[in-house]
Length: 71
Length: 143
Image (cartoon, each protein chain N blue to C red):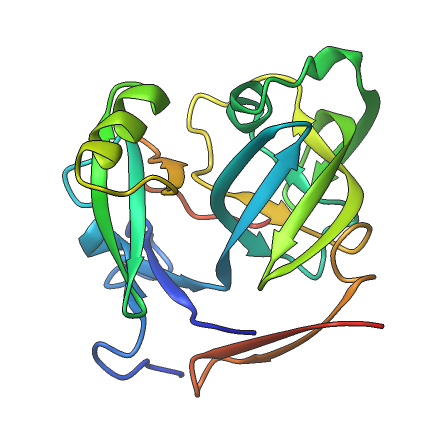
């Protein structure tokens, strides 16, 4: 069974913990993803990111509960 | 362009009771439509026929989603869903290309946080090398 090395992947489960159901604006900083803004709407997340100097964030809507996917 | 895999949360299951995460090849991209641009994440899905994104992304780009051309599709677990296709520009790894992508007809109760890049529109334009053990996804434009 393949077990990944600790810390070898960008861990979205840690980055997005506590943001379930929210819109999140992410920034890429030195290869790491960090939250630059969040809110109950895309606009709110983007505005908060902009206040922190991030004018081109990566926007996602975090699922309110984690799911398994077979696509 | 080199990308990393990402660990996403997933619920414990009877089959995998200790597993609370899944490693998925998700990459940052931008979708451009007219003067709008949305940076977001997308799953590289070699089994998907098309590129499909959640409804909210189309709305965010100002696209009149139901005015697009409709496609019905099913996932591996069955079920039937639909998407309306529109011409957009996908920006991946610094490259731009025009293609038709779908935006889902209705939002799910549990929307995926990212879209999916499939064969038509993505894999027919890019050479992709996956190496999960080295944690690398190399994406190169096919000339």
